[in-house]
Image (cartoon, rainbow, N blue to C red; front, side, top):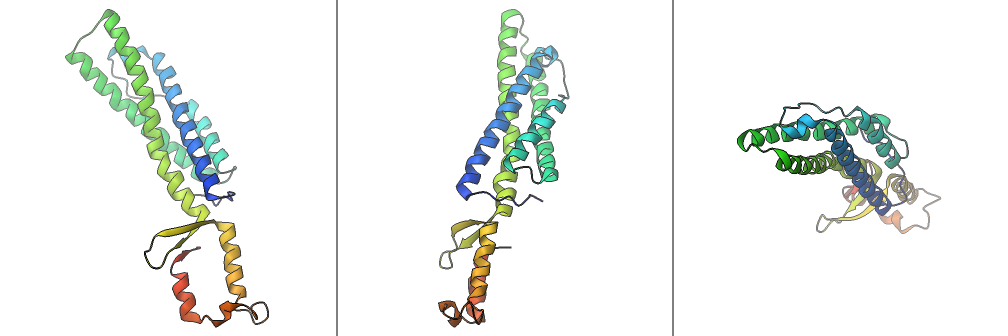
Length: 207
């Protein structure tokens, strides 16, 4: 389960998430391009089934923990593993397709060198995109949902406001105070009965 992190605002979270995903994708891309250059067989058409992503594991985890201010290490580790698995799967598929292409269209000399350079570039970019596609929903979906409550407009059902979880709890305390004999004595919320509060609660996600 994603951790509950106290971000200053939803926009601050979205900005950090965008930077984290961009940095993660670029890191995977550069690592893949460097690693595959050290594995000439991958560009020469020899079947290479695995790429050692161990050096990326610690770097990816560190980037995710920066996003969560050090919270949710277990969640970050699992998200990191899924992202790396997606990148590795893209690597395997690309090597198989590259091998099939070279068997169908043999090249040599300068043409082979040019093909290798193109292959290295497209492989790294594809692995970076694959990791971000896997990681993105875990950040903008699961982590966002854990960190922000929301209010849904009753008439049309569309989302109107997001609140950090801590602020949401403060609003709940304020709402509860309206019903307190002393704290809410002068509050207009005193006129709301239980049915009205249940209708309001139906459009809130403060859990």
